[in-house]
Amino acid sequence: MSKIEIINLDPQNEAQKLAFKQINYEWINKYFKVEKGDLDSLENPEKYFLATGGAVLLAQRGDEYLGTSALKPMGNDAYELCKMGVSELARGFGIGYLIGEAAIKKAKELGAKKLYLETNSSLTPALTLYAKLGFTRIENFKSPYQRADVAMEMWF
Image 1 (cartoon, rainbow, N blue to C red):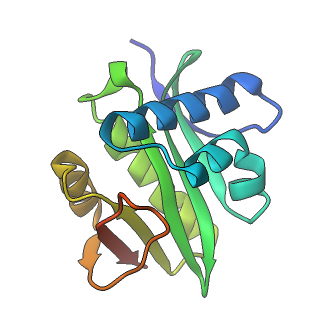
Image 2 (tube, rainbow, N blue to C red):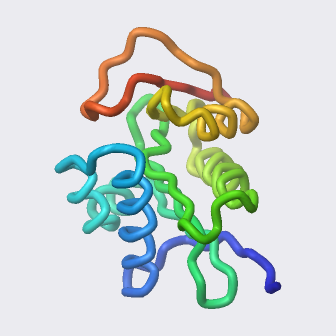
């Protein structure tokens, strides 16, 4: 088995853009309902993440994409971990932890003092993963997503 690398999305690489869209769409669609904001950002990672000063990362093994994460600036040296997904075939192999660690490292490189995310309480494995990565729950938040009922953050 070849080594897994974490790479930055190349906006000129159509295979990478397609992998970002497909992996996240399948993840969201499997556990929730895909909302309009999801489609816009999945189809336009350059506009929603790269052009705003954020990043899109991919976990790659050979020419296969296994997982993705996306960071978006929120202001005040804070970033949101907005999209994180693992392909169906790669689940259960630690890809989520690898891509999560890479997103944390990237957020620090971008100057973040805080990393924030929203998820759903029904996703026990994701909540466990985020806690293992160092996120803690926060109370009383408002989300543009109907599915989000848990918010978590990490301070650097």
